Image 1 (cartoon, helix red, strand yellow):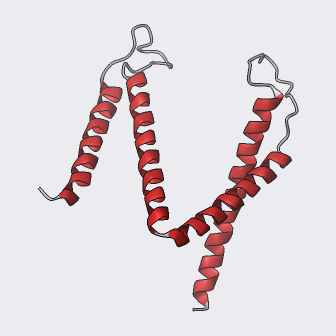
Image 2 (spheres, rainbow, N blue to C red):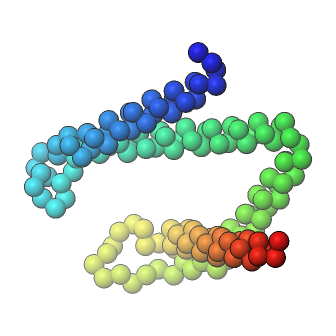
Image 3 (cartoon, rainbow, N blue to C red):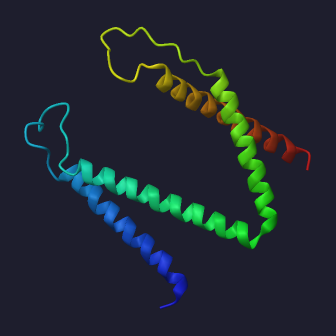
Length: 150
């Protein structure tokens, strides 16, 4: 067995486990007392959420690991990564400055999330997402227009 086939086999195994869990989610029954209601909860909800978190952490580890490996084998990439991280930090700072932390007057809600710190964090995340969305659209338009003149 060639070493280059190992990642392919691992991916197939992860896919098979995911398919089994999804099948159990849809066809495995519901928690007692919730079946037949609009809030029916599948038996394997917690298991499938843990599986999703595990896959997320594996993905993050692989991405960060290969990025670190690439940076050490290509020192020129370290400068580029630093620039990207700097631009990201500036955009997050701008988003934080634009975010509002005013407590909302919500009817029939007295939960713990309507506090200035949480509202500032959520506002920062939303504004940062909007900025990245606009930058993505600008990049797509620039790319399309630049290709017209080539």
